[in-house]
Length: 71
Image 1 (cartoon, rainbow, N blue to C red):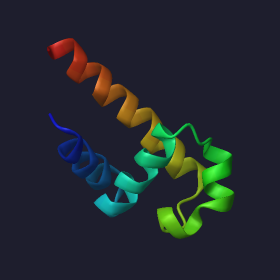
Image 2 (cartoon, rainbow, N blue to C red):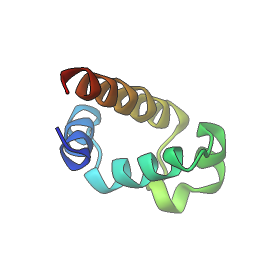
Image 3 (cartoon, one colour):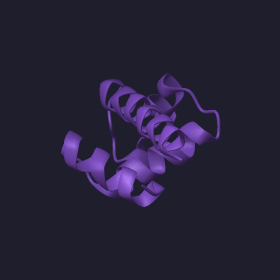
Image 4 (cartoon, rainbow, N blue to C red):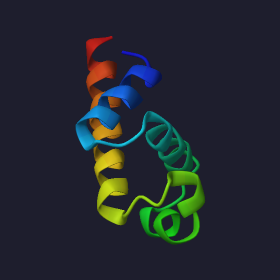
């Protein structure tokens, strides 16, 4: 499963746009914290709250780990 497919899956599960997931994952991969993103990057994430951001963070970690194990 590639990153775009992961973003699509997470977006479907959480009921948000894939672009919101993509932007959030990029911020998380750049070592930004969830509280920082929730407070100062609302324009990038489409105003996702901390619970949604944490759900994205947890799910992308899980899917990446699962993908690594498959390979």
